[in-house]
Image 1 (cartoon, rainbow, N blue to C red):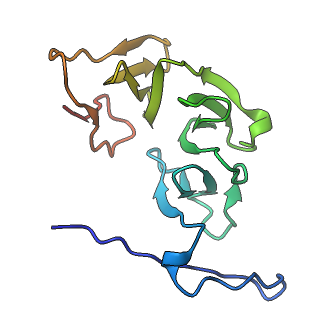
Image 2: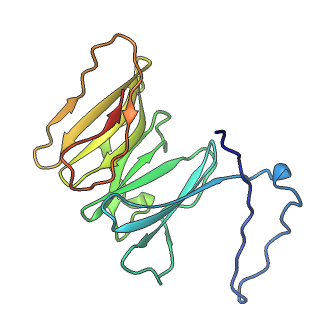
Length: 191
């Protein structure tokens, strides 16, 4: 069964806010189309709203136990800057292409995750593309692409020990599977 692309333009404002410019009559003529994703972090502590196009993204977050609060912005959308969040402990982990065409991993305190507070966890590597991340209670998993092949790298939070999943075939595809349990000791992946 095929998936149909659905377009929607949603706008809301408080009466005290200034009006916004008119929206395009047709979504197909809209020059600023973004996908919107809403989900909870795997530890279920935050709700994330990610607005992303092919070249830019913006993330807002809300503590899941304070649903009446307003969503807070991590960093404003900028041309050619993509970033994506996950959460562990008292920190957000951010996959960003800021100064890193192949992405890098940074972290920031959940109380103030703006760019001024980003601390590098995994630096940019010219020969490795960081394509995904999943954070569990005891470890985190990075999905990378190196030499044209996907790699899955697991890091233990307690020891800092890192290992790659070895794949026996010379050519293959692999990636993150469905991982819904934060406390899991198992990472599910497709191969």
